Image (cartoon, rainbow, N blue to C red; front, top):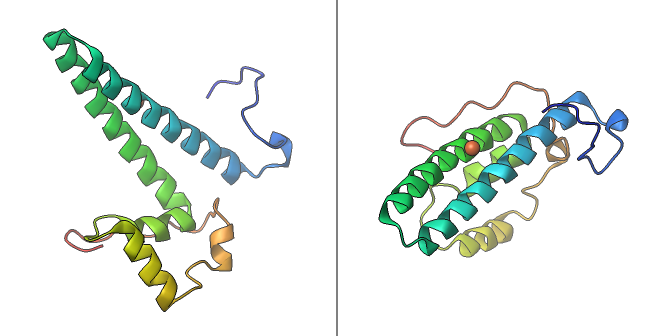
Length: 132
Ligand SMILES: [Fe+2]
């Protein structure tokens, strides 16, 4: 991210840790990839040109890849993302029911360590294939 003199931070960047600034870059990039997916999808629906539709679908699919790569980068650096993605991704059944069932079993899924989104500890290893 080039320094254009324009700050995208909510807080004074000088008060932010290096980890938080890097996490901001990752999250901002993820937002941009998700916006691109949304825009391509809308253009795919709207265009009347079949060849343009195919090009846009190809581009949308590349943006999905970019978003997933960026999300994985974020997951490796954020305990909160790591825990929640492990909790919700690749599960069967109603998503809200999963959240409510977990809350009934253990109302304290969040712990103090999750406040540190920009943790520097070694990332949690990804789940083995076939497991979550
Ligand atoms: Fe992209």
